[in-house]
Length: 361
View 1: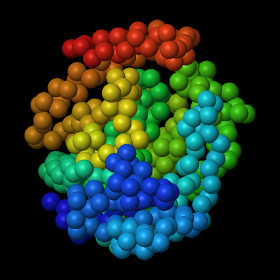
View 2 (view 1 turned 60 degrees about the horizontal axis):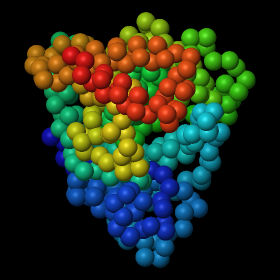
View 3 (view 1 turned 180 degrees about the horizontal axis):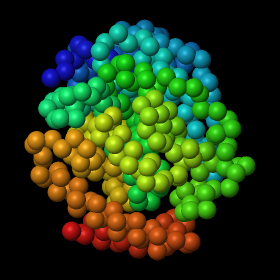
View 4 (view 1 turned 180 degrees about the vertical axis):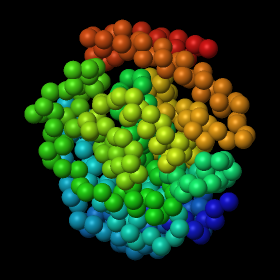
């Protein structure tokens, strides 16, 4: 098992200085978040990577007072135009990129974790998963000559391109755990540029685009940008624009998932992000994303390990059937998808359809 002393947790992003020490468990009190993470990893190093214009209150103006081991600062690169035409969410790609990379460059341990300042750890399932799948891969015929150094991340919002939103290589950026050298390779990429951020203001969406695809202003989603830049370093075929999918891209995406990633559900990982508490209760999102069982099916297909968790694999098969049905519903609603999914009058109908899908064997 991985020793805590070999891990550095990089808390990246802005700090809500007005809520420090309030004890709020809604993620707004950074001090609370650090304390929770310390409980999970008592012997790990914790770095706060934030902005040079951050003015900490006198009670918390040193690393010791804040509960961390080191604070590193960067000049705020600012935000880009909103990712989608509905003005949500904001495009803070370069803020996240810079603060994460600065923290990683200050890391000296073998393993590192990138964590948002508004989240905290609740357990250490990520360590168990890393060791478990590392052992399984090394025991397979393919794994003997493969340098397996996966990134462990959570299922929200690791998108399944086969259902609603056709975005391959859209991996969650909430939390990443892995070898520091691997995370550096993932996060050490050029800034997201203005031209890409406003791409669909000047170019039409692909003719195959559905309602969800046409919401994008950016050429490629922020999460996709980071992941595709990383995947290209290993020769995987990646999309040029956000909803570009073909057989080669989908094949390489499944291969990439098995070889470079470990996807865990939130509780399985041991992480909480209260801001997005609502996603746990969304059946729509549960079909839109790749949960651990979905990833595990791809892991088994690629590596063919000697021991297969039959319960998890059975869940993978069940969810595949449910996802086919979900895709059919999205296709049938077609041109009036905006009304179907967003109109308040159809909330009950939407919930009924979503829950009905879950009963498909």
